[in-house]
Length: 193
Image 1 (cartoon, one colour):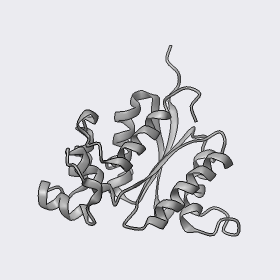
Image 2 (cartoon, helix red, strand yellow):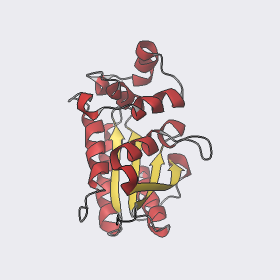
Image 3 (tube, helix red, strand yellow):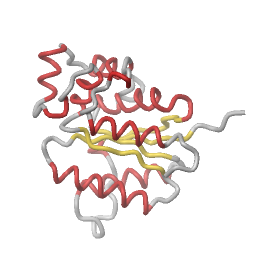
Image 4 (cartoon, one colour):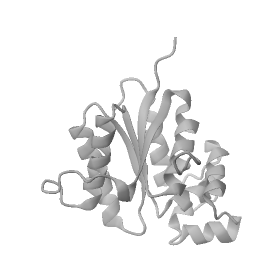
């Protein structure tokens, strides 16, 4: 008898990340299915700009307020896990704030497993890596590179690249993508946090 799947709340910046309700899945949902199989079940999603901010007085930076707000929503809706991605967009401080917020969310919501991450520089760099392109995370404008080199423009085309992802062919230098995949995979390990 198999265990019940872990209920997952996902967050991202827009349709490429989390899809559109009742239309199509985004990259996060597709990757969760690919990595977690039937052990993870996405039950809700939230765009970054629509997250109800966590207590403003205690948490001043907006990235922390969003991560903690998303964690609160996941906790209140009885999700066992939160999975999200946020583009770095050449903002190293944003990345630092997000990573610190993941630690705070893990401490604040002990019952919730958090697998968040920052795409360097954007989700499109992860698409390039999924297509086998080395140095994908070094492009300042990965969206432009993806359009020019692979003619991928639409959400459906980008999501399809993740659907056909072969992790064995993922370039070693796709560090932010590999780290995120490891975090999502850890959600399926019993007793891991």
